[in-house]
Length: 327
Image 1 (cartoon, rainbow, N blue to C red):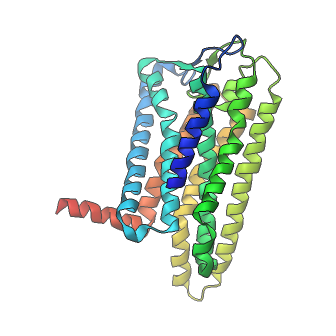
Image 2: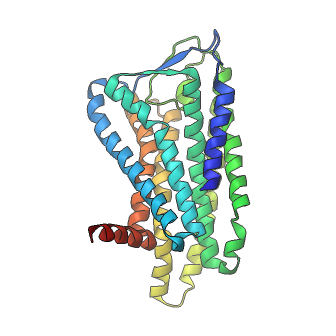
Image 3: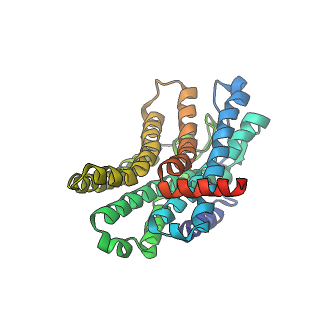
């Protein structure tokens, strides 16, 4: 948890230094976010499920953080990674949803140039950090099942810190590239938040380098994460099928099922949303924006539900907490 807190602080300092007082005649002082273009009349209704998802995400992730902090028996690498995932989910959803709701409820569409770039950085930084945490959790499961004697020696705090620092540095080019383009066409972003492609598409310049870097990150960073997760689970499944009894196989696989659900909750909408933003010109704009907005809210909402229901230790402590309060 300390590693994630450090990277939140580092990201904030980077954004403050890079984006304060950066506007000039080529950069607008503000952007205008349209929310869900074409569905302005239903913004109030759309805000209801969005607000509910955010409330579940905040309550669920804070509950996981509270339970792990309160229970000494959960002070293990697996649950530390779960806490890191919870903090990342909270940051990613909080960096976008309050502004979305201000658009839906109060028609407050303006966002400053520096705030837009800061939001862009936080979205991409913490979505990739979340992916990296899921890789670390997959490797953690592999070590616990296939190589338990070296379990406590591999994913140390320094290794986790280095992974997080790499993510922070890899996502820095997003706002740097967006900042260097001249924006002389319009300052209206047909989106509910400042995504990288949505912003640079407004530039009156050749933005291929931004587009190529976005695709590079999608297929190299996220793609490599998926590859390492697939390798980890291939080795895990091979070890599971070598167990002597069916009960042992089911019990061991059960320890991985919640993590597999969390992986699907993140990567399926992520790839679908990213590819649709770049190649889905024939898809209605309001549908593309809705899917992209849901992508930022679905994993933070689903992760605490998945781990709360499917992880025996979390579920047990949660039930214990509620029954203790009732008594």
